[in-house]
Amino acid sequence: MSYKPNTDRYEEMKYRYAGASGLKLPELSLGLWHNFGTVADHGVATDILCSAFDHGITHFDLANNYGPEPGSAETRFGQILKKQFSSHRDELIISSKAGYLMWSGPYGDFGSRKYLLASCDQSLKRMGLEYVDIFYHHRPDPNTPLEETMGALATLVAQGKALYVGISNYHAKEALQAKALLDSMGCPCILNQVRYSILDRWTEEDNLLDAMDGKVGMICFSPLAQGLLTSRYLDGRVPSGSRASENVFLKAKSITPEVVEKLNKLDQIAKRRNQSLSEMAISWLLKDERVTSVLIGASSVAQLDENLKALKGDTGFSKEDLKAIDELTT
Ligand SMILES: NC(=O)c1ccc[n+]([C@@H]2O[C@H](COP(=O)([O-])OP(=O)(O)OC[C@H]3O[C@@H](n4cnc5c(N)ncnc54)[C@H](OP(=O)(O)O)[C@@H]3O)[C@@H](O)[C@H]2O)c1
Image (tube, rainbow, N blue to C red; front, side):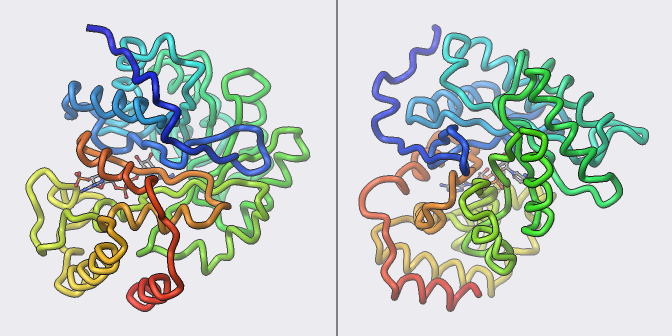
């Protein structure tokens, strides 16, 4: 049976502008780094995407290397897109990236014009798309002139293969340089996609939001610290099927008694606020209006539903709550 999206899908979601651009993103976006690759359950992956869209999540974030196998998340997403969302393409913001190792040899990694242009073509083919809405340079490349990398992004826009471009994992200094270069090419940088959560504050130390001055939006990835800022590990165990049980990107050994104690203290603050830990972690990021979107991952519809609750009700923070969170985490 073909999917019929919820007709009220735009009622509960709020949208924020990406920097100085005219593009709005949902406060909550969905990333396909995990749970969409070769080994993923196709039915669950479909349900997660449809459920997200039913709640006004219009933005799906991918990259060339998401899998495993690298590329397989884009392939699966393309299949689901074709079957379920073909008449809704104009309601979706689909992003991809290049910057990490994708193919062997000297041209499948980092930031050369050769790599970026070829990789975008490959991503479009895998997803069955004519264009992506946002194409990012995935990480800074110390060995390629920034002019070349930013020039490749501008070319993608000129070719109609990307509508907007962004950068990812750029610190303030290099982000400002990238922005200036793209501005000079008439191709604004609309987003910097960076890791930011209650447990990971490097962007604050870097003064990234102040430096961007609202011109380049911030979209925060791993807002739940890959699952740490949820109820998943509060009892100190590593459940089978969890990301920590895979022991690749989130290591089981990182669930130490000290970490578990800290998470439980954060959970107590969340409970006082009538939120779950994941809801509080998302609300905490959205309290700053300069954050464009919080980019979560989910391995089930139930997780997505819980995380969406962060957008409901009074999500403001008292000074006492903020202080208590900071005391535990900075
Ligand atoms: N630009 C970059 O360099 C970069 C890097 C990393 C990620 N990203 C983007 O950011 C997206 C999100 O990253 P992320 O997956 O690390 O984000 P995250 O939201 O911090 O972690 C998501 C994981 O946490 C667990 N989880 C989520 N909600 C839960 C809940 N309510 N209860 C219990 N567990 C829950 C799930 O893991 P399990 O169920 O498997 O345990 C889920 O897959 C990626 O998909 C990607 O699009 C970008």
